[in-house]
Length: 357
Image (cartoon, rainbow, N blue to C red; front, side, top):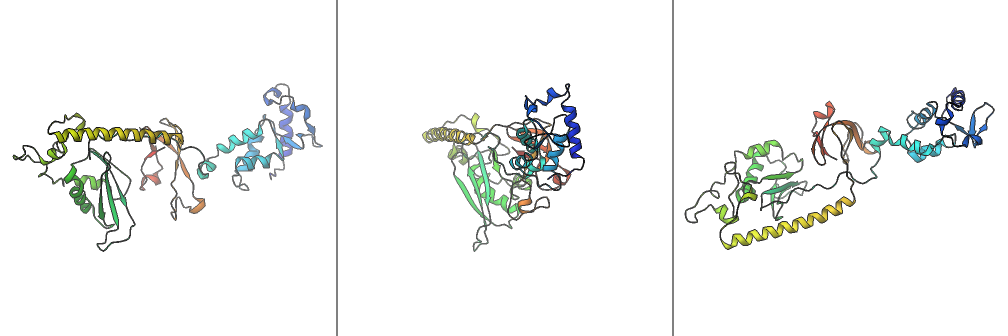
């Protein structure tokens, strides 16, 4: 397996130095040296396995040749140990080989993850009122309808779970999406406090910026003498949020007709049920997770999400790495989110610099 013409003489020299009185204690042989056999060339062995002392760097040389040389294929810990133990022996050999393989950066990048996911479940806060916090996503690649619609835009209220399903097209412009959002959501429920969405290319900063000039729902937010209030306030029991009137509903005292009181009680009940459900979800999820924290300045690897048919880093299929890096942590954004110092070639791509662990 390993062919170095000078290796036998190097082993003999290392053994000679290791058995000297001032060095023998560091070898931690625990009396095993009495079982050593002597080969014709003078090297010591156990059951015909050459002893590699701690005194020299022979162990590192042997493990490197067995794991990282051009004749090796980065074998796993068990295979590497089984191969080496036929030829060599040293104290605590199995554990040392396991530690060596675990520190191999190439193996860490390509091996499948076989441990609990890192980071405990972090849940967003429960909304205080209806349609103040929403989520949105696009269901794409659907069969095309007669109106050329092939995407469903799903907008969900995180409190009541009520939703709007808006048919759209792949070719719809940002202006078209803006008009649909105003018509289907903002005009009925007001401007949400927060929006949770994925990284869909439809939901870019241009979309959010375009909303600032498109808030055309003054009718529902205007005072009507007949009811002595705005239609929105009568319908929901609170003022409609807008860029001119931005109120956190948690600070509003609800007063008015009996229906408002009943609605408020229902909201309290909904929030209690949501909290109970979230507690159950968190307890179930955290059983399969482990807490993990990093510090600013630590270097970490970034997991690459596999996608069928996608070429990443000039490799495809089984040759694709599972992880890339190492990357330096620049900042901690949240409990499980960190900002990384990416390579220049990654900064110019669509890859963000902030990731979840």
